[in-house]
Length: 308
Image 1: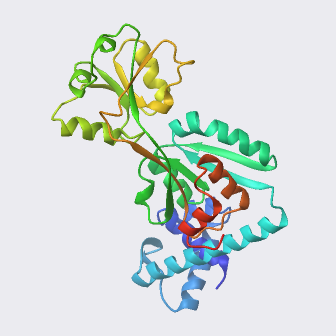
Image 2: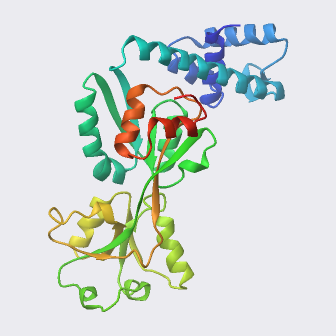
Image 3: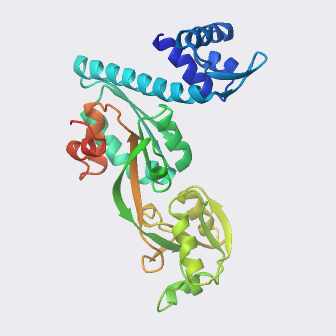
């Protein structure tokens, strides 16, 4: 039994039991993977996969347990490499961030700027996606840190930590009738076409919950995955916008007006996630603390149940 066999096993499962795709991902041959998996089964004395002819169709019951153990072994193997790299060169390496548009566009730039100044030798990458996509990227080791408002806490393989709280606001064109309203209400918002986030993004569930609780059906005219698109269509006069307050920048959004709406919608919490039991490089701890100062190395390590 060797690590290569365990990697082959894990990749075949990751690729939906498609050996051809696994071979392509691992830059090897399909027969080579099949042979190594058979050798692994022979050594273990049990079949890992259910087969229909030459085609793999499922994991056997013992195969499920074997896969779980194999993934833990591979994970710890990667941690060992991280430890070696940490002590060989503490200030170089790579850090891949996965974030939603709002985080990447409005919250990360000053943090990234500070981080690059502090660690010029670290190669920094930024992936954007919806919360489900970025969570899966971290779980699949395609990214190291995920930052989003929704969904991250739903994954058992991730440790999620609260970063900061934010509220929604309403954006409207200048001279809009809502500027004359004595008090902003959900009923008044429902009188106009609304442009807001897609269901997977930026606290959209909190918006829907508020209207539902009030028994009001909002006129959702358009949805988008980022605040810039929402603001663009509000400027065109297609409706009023509901977006993250942090996405409204007065000096840049001079053609719009912002109305506070924290009394209408519940607050949202942005969270950061890393793989459970992962060995984090020192600069990863520093990045996390730059993004959320209360998340010190000690706090993060304690949440992951490891020694800092």
